[in-house]
Image 1 (cartoon, rainbow, N blue to C red):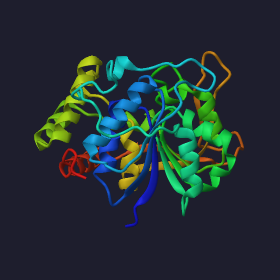
Image 2 (image 1 turned 135 degrees about the vertical axis):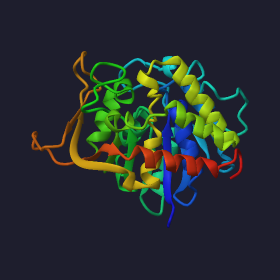
Image 3 (image 1 turned 135 degrees about the horizontal axis):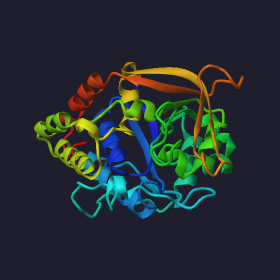
Image 4 (image 1 turned 120 degrees about the horizontal axis):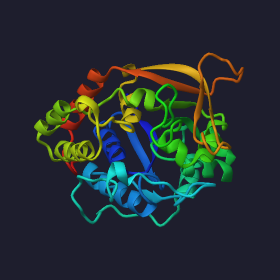
Length: 316
């Protein structure tokens, strides 16, 4: 297998941290060119700090980290400490990152990497799409350097998790999401419809803890902290949102996907960030995305267990 060259655009966030650990645990699948951070789950200073900590845990000595946009394109920033804790990675021991921060803004760094790449790259996007939209505005030619964007965001049948009709990443910066959807880049999208199917129940968290490695233990701690902060029926446990992106690239057969046209609402004060997912072709607009509808959650969790069992903190 030839590893995919990827840029990971993220806003860590506990589930972003877990996603980064899954990427680190699959070096035959991913060659990480850069990590770019954006404000989202917590403000930019914290998402950048947390991404650097994640690199320490992953053992990524050579992966550059760049800080990006501190606020959405046209709205004030909304964050999600009520889910992820004050630091964004509640359950992770406080530390000073050893991984340096590169003194270049994420957007020009992303543009330069995409222009210089020998072959189109995959972008993994697990936060608001502000950095990517800004890069497309500044340098429209980078479309040719992007093979696909694999992203977590949106909802169709599940409704919203930050407003009645909008998922968090889309609601934080709907204008950026709309720009990316209209760019003509192949999109693979994991919204709440599918991420809510992958639940970290009490027994699953216990199985992760039983692996006994530092990474698996700290992930179990993070998931327990979320479970204790939120209310879940019948110990459903917290859903794993962002890790669906890495899981898809590791094992695409875990998911069912359908072609659709995706548009993002930007004008309504009631439904901004709503994702209009046209699977039936009702709008007559062309297909611009693949939308995940289902996941084999048992097989997905088995994949997570297997990968994390092979990843020791700082081992790569």
